[in-house]
Image 1: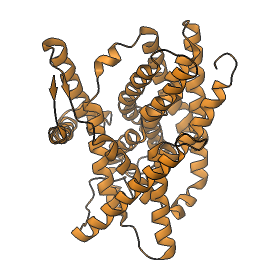
Image 2: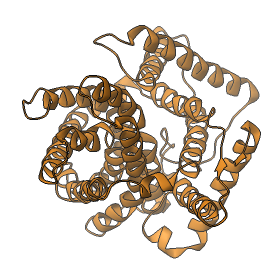
Image 3: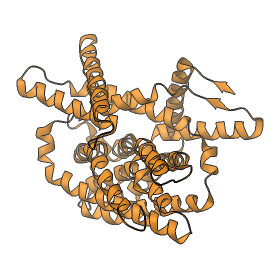
Length: 400
């Protein structure tokens, strides 16, 4: 067993990002299918660690203490960059996309329960391999697995939830690019040369020029820290109540309140470009840590029926993105980028969705609408509507 400490893990995550950049730059197939750099580097390292464990018996483990703060900092940046005036402009689109997202939740849970029942498994296992872990991710999976074990007596619910969420995280980062490539061929793209036509917005252009001073950096860092402190405090107050929400949703909500509250009072204007820099750094490092820490042997240990169910869920996600998300959202370039983002958080998490969209827009041109809609729906509304949908399914007599 090799255990890397905090500093060793940080070095490893940074090297994973550099490796991913090199791989995407030199491997045509990765560029063709718009695979995000953290996904490319992280999966290669995870596969190497799997081979090391299988052939030499040596297992490498990382210090994951930085993973949660990085994820929360990413959501804080989303909240701080969420201008309610701009969000109001896209209000109709947000509502339509939210309806599309709810449709996927229903598809995932119906497919999960139906396939699990057909294979002779507990329907609860199908529900756990549905929107709970796929659209919900590791946090939602961990929260509901306790309920499934304690209330419904489902054995090994926690292990199954983590394995399903991990599978979704991997596939969410892998299928978004190919889906977007398939759709982009059918629409007119603005072209990468137009990425510099307008000032970059939020997370849309992570490599664009940023003018940062030490003073402004400290101000932005302080705002993100306040979001983390306030969000975790609110999350602890809501824990165990009917209004309980994941901590990252509370952090995002605090960011929205701070940025729009300060702007309304005229006290301070958020430096959006700088917030996006820190948010993108947090995003990249979080994905690198999450993917390089994957225990791929846990996925290999999934029972064949569950593995088959997850493959069907992946196929369903791709088909839904192509035939529902893309068509309902307008059959244009923005809709193609939205479809790539939907694959990211429909199977994995919002950070994966952002990485998917960045990989597409860097090559084919900007999509301001997608970067306005996906972060808010994928990071905030999804958890609320997912909780409602899950409770509705548990109320069905043949499941709960």
